Image (cartoon, rainbow, N blue to C red):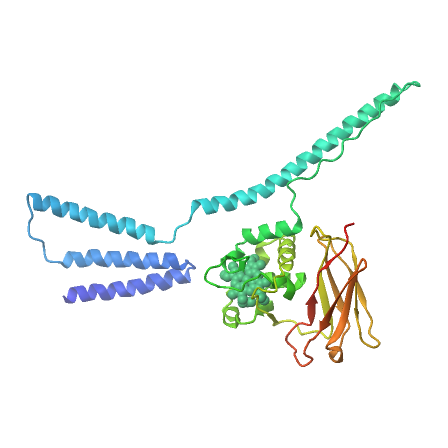
Length: 359
Ligand code: HEC
């Protein structure tokens, strides 16, 4: 009996050493648990050595005992192995396929470009031939092949949705009802109404930059990974932020961002998209914002290639509650800048999208 107690004590020490030792070496929890399980297995074997010998079995009883033993071992082995976390090879394959698809699209586009160039060269050759043989005769009109549509190329927003999937933001966030079932992080369906593209970018690269209201605890624990700055390219983070900035569903419960690092500026930012009726963002459109206050002055901005604009207005505490007109290409919208002058935490900003006539 005392021998067993000694063995259990030794095993307990070994288990602790295995857990903390492997933890210090940076093994994930699954592996730590596995090492502890090995110690437990060893303990079981050593305890068996102390067990009183079994009565001798023979005949059918021996066969039954052997089969029973085999059955127990099989159940333990298969059950144990399948209770560890599993990787679904199909999911992993899907991810690789996605990365490859993007590469393939680039290669195909490249190929398309080379082909167009070859066609041009051929056309030029024909052209020079006709010039040479042109002796007062009719020269056949030369047609330069038009560049084929760059099919397969994604828009910035589509690319951003892909980046969102690739980096598995859905593990903690929900968009359109899809994603994290355990509510690890906020729903993002209305994030475009709350954050500018630049602020979304900053949040992804530095999760301490701001936190979602109601998620203070998760924020303090650093739940959102801060690895994206090392992993993402500038193109990826811009596409991702652009995609998220188009999500404006006011019925969604996306929590308000609270800025930790930046002071609230004494100004007001208007941001959003100018779109054609088809929903496509309109690049290069001039947008003008004007607060209706005495002596106030307006400001302008231009949309980028996704149709996104940002305008910074010089508005002061006493301008709170002022009406602001925003216009682009003859289309005007109005909103009330109703910030609380004593609130030094909430950003003074308004998202506003405009739809203008087709170009
Ligand atoms: C492991 C979980 C986890 C992953 C993965 C994760 N986030 Fe988060 N995220 C959180 C949590 C928790 C919060 C709320 C606390 C905070 O703001 O720090 C949050 C907050 C946010 C916010 C602010 C939301 C608001 O309402 O203010 C944005 C934007 C965001 N995440 C974007 C992303 C993007 C984009 C990715 C993928 C590149 C991502 N997150 C990956 C956990 C995660």
